[in-house]
Length: 102
Image (cartoon, rainbow, N blue to C red; front, top):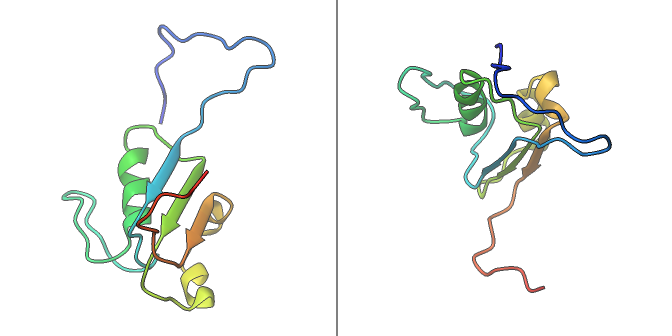
């Protein structure tokens, strides 16, 4: 994927660049099938969204995924490719309904 450089600006020295973050509040497991042409699958949403966004030159720096259904951790992580393991943060717990008190 080649991003356009026209109109690109340089960040000031010492400035941090933006990051691409993705949040999935019903991630399911990581293995299974999906159809990139329709964006429909009865299974893993994280790899589906990673591929759909990559088509538009967007690669996520971090992915936070929650899933209510309990999965065996070894089985879940065995399906995650090595290049996604460092950026995927998988929480196998329900998303809280109430906001976190500050």
